[in-house]
Length: 82
Image (cartoon, rainbow, N blue to C red; front, top):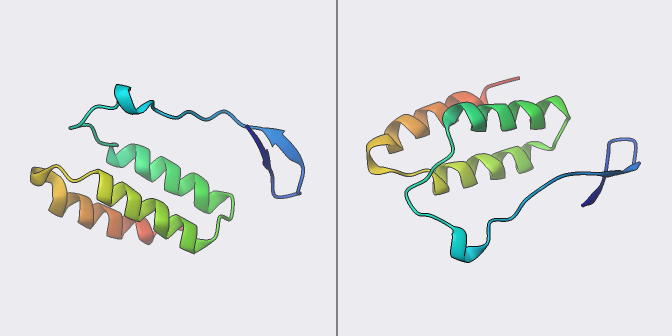
């Protein structure tokens, strides 16, 4: 897909979409991967409201019962990254 960078230049980006029939329940994104995504967003100056949205999606889609409290704590810690 084509996107615009910070200098307004159009560049090609690689992305993917999981087909609905190929989605699996019980999967979640690791804390380390969310941390990597958030670090990249912050490094590239993405607005904080979008970073917050990404974190909210990560929490909402990563809610195995045994990890909810730990994930919430880790997400709060991610919000303080600079």
